Structure formats: structure tokens, C-alpha cells
Image 1 (cartoon, rainbow, N blue to C red):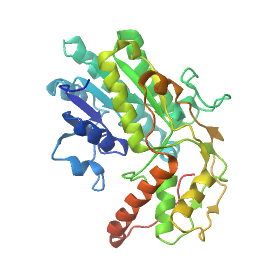
Image 2 (cartoon, rainbow, N blue to C red):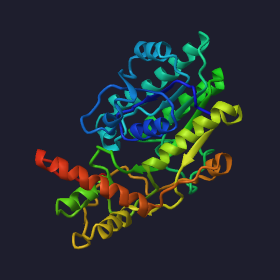
Image 3 (tube, one colour):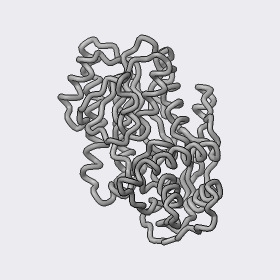
Length: 337
């Protein structure tokens, strides 16, 4: 159990971070949040009176180490990352610095704290399905090799390998999560397919699809990803046999880009706005989806939200957000799909 533990969530102002913080708070667990920026629209601000927010850059090792030691952290959810594939392709060095250096800084800071006698009971590191790269066998299983080829994919392959090396080399209590494509309220990266499509339709525009619409992916509601991460950490505290393992987080229901855009349009009653298929995306893996059999069998976890349920909640959230933000000059941008 996590009760009584001092918990750190890196990337707390991002997309997944506030959901993890919220779930921990619901369980009566004290949370320290770390991020280098706190965007005005982040859901973390609604939790600011209950989460100890710290402005720290994970690329700064000394600052990471001081925070972990000064706050006497026992459990870490390492979620901080540069998470946009297109940005990684255009700017690989900042992505490598955040995702790779940031990971080794957090892991080494935790190792040094533990070496000094501090109790480090669990570290859950957010990798990605992209860490697998392009695999021949589908769905991906956790024992598949890490073979990312493009900048973002490589950064997550390295994140994954570095974190697990701290388990194998130093016995650090590490587990890895590899999620499919997250969606839901609070994702401020509006170029992603779900928020981009919803907001285009709200604005009365046809949604844009950069690819030909055929790539197949997992789409998992963000609250389910948060519950999986917390379930893993909770199990780690009392069961060292799961340390060092990776867990795929999926609803095991892959869908094509075009299908999810059409589903959103149907749910919003805007099937009249047919998507514009640009077919210009490059470096796309055609089919990439996961099996979550391991986490279901070992932890008894299962997603709470089917795709339509999650999309309904996302549509409701962005409808409210759009109403609040349209007065400030929101402009639609094409989704990354």
C-alpha cells in the first residue's frame, strides 16, 4: 500500500500527471509534484492546494537529487517527457535531453538517495508503445526488443532500457509502463488526433488527417492509464517479485485513425464534416498495438472505460474548454494522424 509514503510525480503539469496526482489524493496519499513549467491550462492547477508543486527541470541532476532527498521521497512516478512525435522529429536534441538525460537523472538521484539510507520503495517509469519501434508480431508483448528508429521512439527505447538497467545493475525497485495512445481531458497538445478532431468539429471545420487514415493504434483513456500506474506502484511496495518488469497498458481494441475520427464525428453529430485526408505523414508505423495480458493477469487491472465512454468524456471536457478558450482566440491546428 502507498499509505504513509511520500510520493513524487514528475511531469505533474503535463497530460497524465494531474490524473495520477488526483487518483493518489483520492486515496489519501500526500503528493509532491515536479515540473519545469506550469501552463495556465493544466489540470494541475485545480489540485494546487493539495499538491506540493515544485518548479524543477529534470535535466538538472543536482536539483532532482535535492528534491528527492529534501522531501524524503519513497515512491516516484516518472512521467516527465517531451511527448510530441513531430516535435521530436524536428528537434531531436531537446527531446533526447528531456527523455533520456532526464530519466538517468531521476534514476541516479533516487539511487544516491537510497545509498544514503533513504527508503525508495517504488519507481514507475512511463515509457511508451513507441519504445518497441516497428515489430513484426502483433500485438506487442513485453518481451519484444526495444528498437525505436526515429527520434521520439529512440528516446523512449532509451528511457525504458536505462530505467531497467537500474534494476538489473543496482536492484532499484523499478517498473515500466508502456501505454498506447492516451486521450482525454487535459491534453493541451491540440495537434493530437483526439483533441484536434474534437476542436475542429466544434469550430465547424473538417478535421485534418496527416496520414492516409489507415494506421492502426491503441487508444486508452487517460484515467485508465493513471489507475494502471498507481496499481503497479501499490503492488511494488508489497511484492518485490514484480520489480524490474514492464507492463503494457492497453484496452486491447486497436482502431484505425480514420475510424476514430469518424467515431468522434458521429458522436458529435457532425458527420457532415468529412475528414480531409492529406496523406503527407512520413515515418509512420502502419500497425502498432499492445497486449495487456500481463497486467491483467498479475495485477488484476482492467480498463474502466471503453472507447466510446472515454471519447464521450473527452468530448464533454473539450466542449467546455473550447467555450472558455474561444474568446481568447483559439485557432484549430491539424491533428497529428
